[in-house]
Image 1: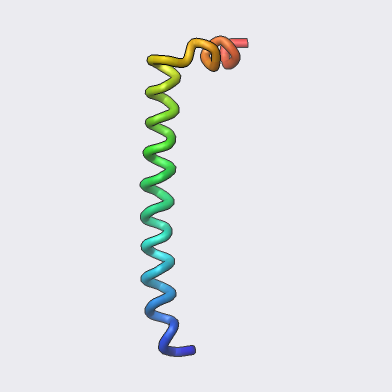
Image 2 (image 1 turned 180 degrees about the vertical axis):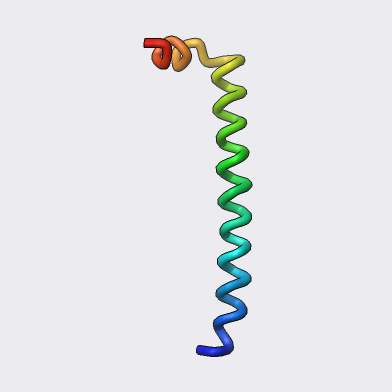
Length: 47
């Protein structure tokens, strides 16, 4: 079990980094799409 601890921590930090990156990309992507090519979602959110 001791051998798996460092690998697990590295894996967790890597997953956390990728999760933050993915959430950031999806947030900015959704925001960009909402501004440019999504009038339907914009009107839905206004209502």
